[in-house]
Amino acid sequence: MLQLKGIFKNWRTVSVSTALSWSMKLLMVVLIPHEIYYGQYLFSVAAMMAVGVSLVPSIVQKNYRITLPFELDFLITLSLFLHTFVGEGMDFYQKYEIWDQLLHLYGGGVVALLGFVIVYTLHYTRKVRLSIPMIGFFTIIFAMGVGGLWEIGEYSVDVLFHKHTQDGLDDTMMDLIDDLIGGLVIAFIGMIYVKYSRPEARVRLAKPLGEVFGIGSRVDRLMRRITKAEERIRRAKNGNK
Image 1 (cartoon, rainbow, N blue to C red):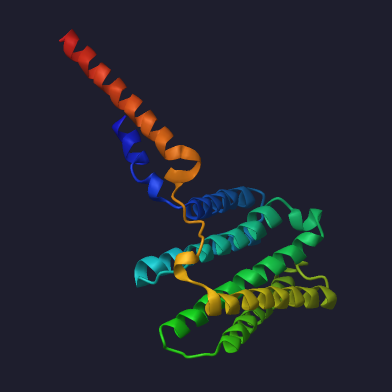
Image 2 (tube, rainbow, N blue to C red):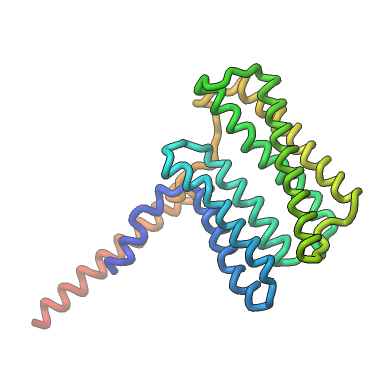
């Protein structure tokens, strides 16, 4: 009973996005031995790398005391989860031709968001002073640069391991165009954010789990029942002595 109390002690302060992010990390970890069992060693290594990359925001915040937006950790993890667990693990890349394009659009947006956070942090801390259009330009270039490295990685995998991750020049160009579109969208939103946003007006998915659907009050009732049950058990034991 006491161990159960310890498990529930701090859960209500965890945000929804953090809970979802760690749930997806756990699912990716569970996928690794499954793929190793079926001989998908290359994909298993990719899944382990994805889990490692998804931990970077948490490690940076803890070790370097840098506060990152909760959206960044969640969105990076979601992008890797959709690629590894859903795309590769559940064969969505093979089942749905549009899956690759959708993920490149989404992934390009996530990478652009990362670029925006980097340049905006430098701008906000006055380490680099940029105009709003230059912040948007950096965001787009960052998304395109990472997208280009991704395509180089796919090409290298095809050559070294005789895979078929790329379907020719048209596929590569469409992926880069998707990265560009994602970068443009985030750059536009980012420039508006820098110019007009107010910190107190931001609505975030950082609501504690204890406040979602009244879960906190329900758990409180459960814990009160557990406490009463413990008291009855103690009384019964004392009465038998």
